[in-house]
Image (cartoon, rainbow, N blue to C red; front, side, top):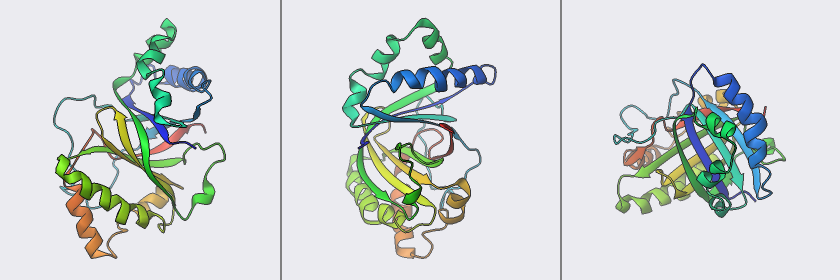
Length: 241
């Protein structure tokens, strides 16, 4: 049902964090959810000092200047990506009151993507999915571009033939979704749902070591990617509780 996504990454100052979060959770999100085609919203806080599989020298990040916020991730899910083009995020924000727009202005380094779902698979803990479609309490979200267009087919094959199938059997995994972009800097995103941060850390970091051939393929593919600032983010849901 939910195949369209609007994702925003940003930072906040400590001074107005409490006021902003109260406004976001009790005013802004309910206004957006008045559109019946928007099925859910979820707000996450990114965790610091996250360990990723084989990350020593393997993860590359964009060096050009793009908005670098990543401590908070706001996500909306809709029936399809077109929902977020009519109105566009800017058009929706322009329709809000001056009070709402002042609160929006407190976001630091904000960037956003409208994305559509390329593929999805359930993990062994899919029974923990919420009935209201809100994603899990713990997520990992990577957003990135391939190094060149020549690498796109191999990236698609790696997800379809190895990474997504491997998540079907990984304890603690609720679901995984591969997204591609309609608008925004990142052309690709990978969206993992976990039962908890502890389970993710226990099983994900070393899960490929049992298959050296696939670990080698992963290393080859990941080294060709260019991530957004802070990506991939491991985050915990702060709304809804």
